[in-house]
Amino acid sequence: MADASTIPPGAPARLPRHVAIVMDGNGRWAQARGRPRTFGHKAGVGSVRAVVEASANLGIEALTLFAFSSENWQRPQSEVSVLMDLFIASLRREVRRLNDNGVRLRVIGGREALVPKLQEQIAAAETQTQANTGLQLCIAANYGGRWDIVEAARRLARDVADGKLDPETIDEGCFADGLSLADLPPPDLFIRTGGESRISNFLLWQLAYSELYFTDTLWPDFDTHAYEEALAWYAGRQRRFGRTPAQARQQQGA
Ligand code: FPP
Image 1 (spheres, rainbow, N blue to C red):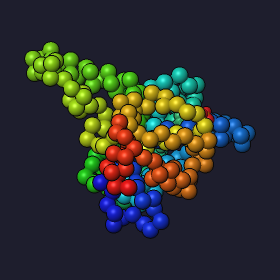
Image 2 (image 1 turned 45 degrees about the horizontal axis):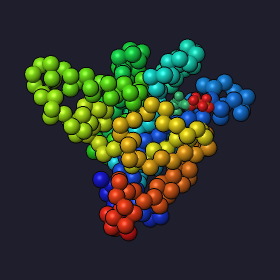
Image 3 (image 1 turned 45 degrees about the vertical axis):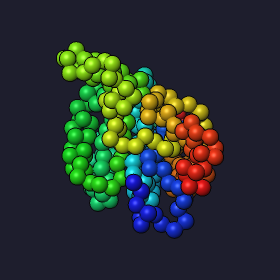
């Protein structure tokens, strides 16, 4: 839970516990400057740093970033290769800073398909930060929401086949337990930069009741100020979860 003592004055009154972001627009940002798309990905690392730092300072509990989707393998091999190198270099460079700030890092997605060097770097970063109790930083790599749901279904099917689970007892709770991020609250706020209004196979199950924020700002331009604007927008939302507006107001204490 966001600890009120860590929230600086001027921060939005109602903070999300969990923010999930689709970081879109790197390629267009670079092309607008006459540079290759990969220049935009490199610039995007600066925005990653800014939102991680701001989230940790604000006392947000969890931040999940969509770094590489299961569909991104279809991009030119040269771009995929630069992205993999960038993830390796960023993990290596940032892990000490994450540790100093109490950030715990984990990667979700089918990591067995990632290059071995990246898998090693991920394992090292997860181990080095596993005892940290501050911001939970989740990086989605080779991730897809449908993949996540199928994995959860497969786990349940195995338990049924092994005689450990009665199919009649399967409910939303035990299904959700098999998904990525099961130990975290679902995202309260979803942000997508880059002007598209799509979820693009991100956390399909987990986003069921998230507030969806779309901005034209391209990811490398998404700085602390832009993030604060998104958080302020979120603070003004009324979350109803199927209730009436009056019930929701009562629930939110407004
Ligand atoms: C989408 O923009 C962005 C990506 C597929 C890669 C995101 C990667 C980073 C921000 C690099 C750093 C990440 C970490 C976690 C260290 P796009 O290429 O689809 O842009 P476009 O829509 O303008 O073409």
